[in-house]
Length: 143
Image (cartoon, rainbow, N blue to C red; front, side, top):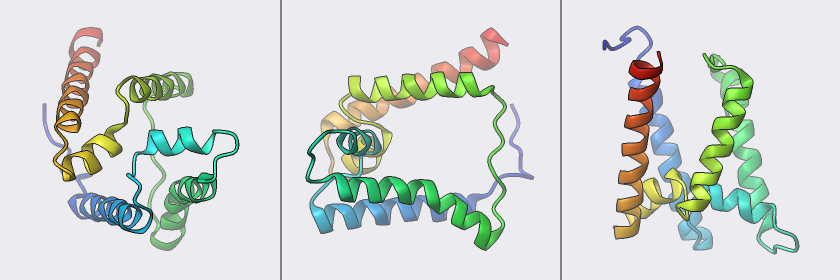
C-alpha cells in the first residue's frame, strides 16, 4: 500500500481536529455536556426535550460548516467511491453500533479519552480494531 502524497492534507486535517477539540471544550465548559454526535442526534429527536435547541443548533452547524468552507475557501466536495445505498446502509450500521456501544467515536474517542475514561479507552480500541479489520476485508478479501 502506498500513500497518496498528492492529496495528503495534514494542515486541513490538523485544523479540523483543532476545531473539533475547540467545539468539544466549549460544549463541556459552556453546558457541561459531552460532544458525542450520536447522543446529540438521539437527544434532538426526542419529544419534549428541553435541550433540543442547542442540539439542533449543533447539528445545523455540522451540516452548514462544510458548505461555508466551500464558499469561503473553495474546499472541494467529497468524492464517494461507493453507491449511495451502500453509504446509507453504512450510516445506519454506524448509528446502530453507536447505540450498542453507548457512544460514538466523537463521544468516546475525543471527549472520553480526554477525560481519561477507561470505558472510552476500551470503546475506542474496539472502534479502531473494527475499522482495521473492515478495511482489510474490503480491500484484500472482498476485492
